[in-house]
Length: 133
Image (tube, rainbow, N blue to C red; front, top):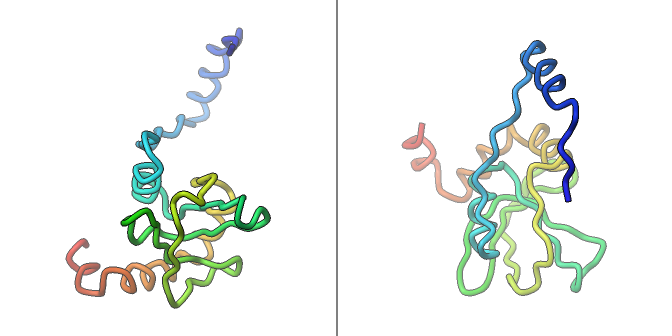
């Protein structure tokens, strides 16, 4: 049970005086794993999947490229913030956790973000990128 903050009005007044606003909640659909991956991919630049029964110490981070036939395909970004040259596909029934919007994903995007255009062009082609501008 969550107890309301007795000093909520004070905290809200301080945030308002400082010009700090609460971030908008992104629209993420948690009704199924497919919808979670799809909506998180739209709302955040990077999505992390975990397959703890396959490899408990690893995670895979990237952009969701495809969701079909019980699989998710990612264009991955490595721990050095460089985009992979190929795509990797994983079985949805092996995914035990999905993360997004965290500090690590943000750091990878911050450094690898300049390469994000390359990733988008790799997935959808340069002509589609120009059309969306």
